[in-house]
Amino acid sequence: MWWLRQVPRLNSATAGVTVADVSKRLVSAFHTSSYRGKAEDRKEMLASLPAKDEGTVGEKSVDIDTLINRKAKFFPDASTSSELFNGIPFSELPICNIRVSSNNTIISVTDYKGVPRLIRSCGIEGFKNTRKGTNIAAQATAVSISNKAIELGWKTIRVKVRGLGPGRMSAIKGLQMGGLNIVSITDNTPVSWNPPRPRKQRSL
Image (cartoon, rainbow, N blue to C red; front, top):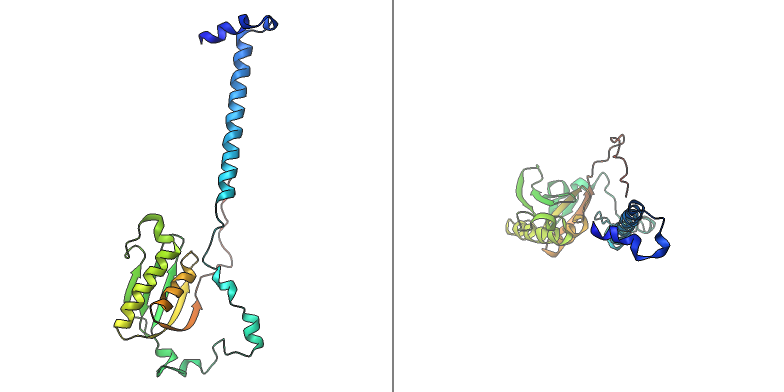
């Protein structure tokens, strides 16, 4: 480093300063400024990211308390299984199972016995990589499977949703957009009462 040898000659005030002292000061100033810049850039990037959506945003619009106060028939009872919907008993309606995760949405339609008849996922629809986990992909998949279900002659269905992810509410909307009449929505998301210990928090 030839320019460090020239530093003491540049100014008469630096008569007692050695080359090692100057190099230490320069190196420490460079390292601290670059670290601060990285930390500030990371904070700005994290602040600009949108809030994480687990697919439960639209569920807040359903106010259960007001429905209960109106005495609306919102929850099933003992007579629900024999109740007719378009001439079909509730217990014999086909079931649409929606399996939602943060990376993909898988939709399958089974008959009332549980035999699968149709299966579609965001990957089958042509969405690749991170696009599979979006709400738009889930909605497109739901619309295509509802068209297939109507071709089989199914108009009225039950829906069972399992898991958390962006495609949770949009898959149900896609089924309605495809022309299916949804009678009931059941949430089958598994809840562990003694979950494993979570990972330690990331240090930023």
